[in-house]
Length: 138
Image (cartoon, rainbow, N blue to C red; front, top):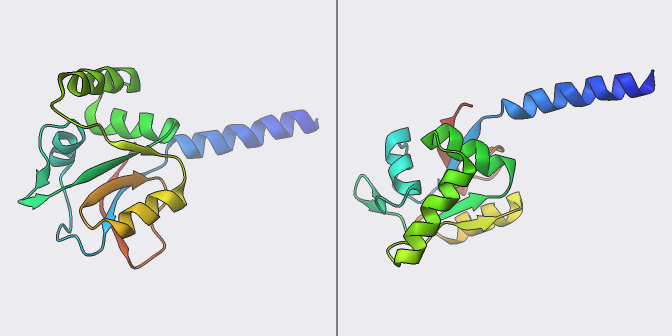
C-alpha cells in the first residue's frame, strides 16, 4: 500500500514539474524589459547577439530537463538537434555556444555580475537585482 501511495505522489510531482514555466532572466540594470519568443529564439540559435539594439554579451544554458524543455518550447527542436546545431557553429568558428550552469545560485550570481547576459530557470528570481523578461509556457 505504501508503494502505491509513493508511486501516486511521484506521478503527481512529475506531472507538475513537466508543466513548469521557464523564466528568462536578466540583470535588472539591462535596458530590456521584455523580449518576444522569436527574438529570443534568434539569440539562442546564434543568429544575433542583440535585442532591440541592446548587445547581449553571453547566454547561459541550464543542465538536463530544464534545458531540453527550454529549447523544445522556444525552438521546437529536440536537445539532440540543438546540440548538433551548436556543434556545427562551434566547429566553423563562427559562434560561441552558451555556457552551461547547473545550480540556480550560480546562474543568479553570473547574471548579477554581468549586466548583458541572459539565462533561464524554472524558478523566478528572488532578488531585486534580477528581472524576468519572458515566461515560456510548456
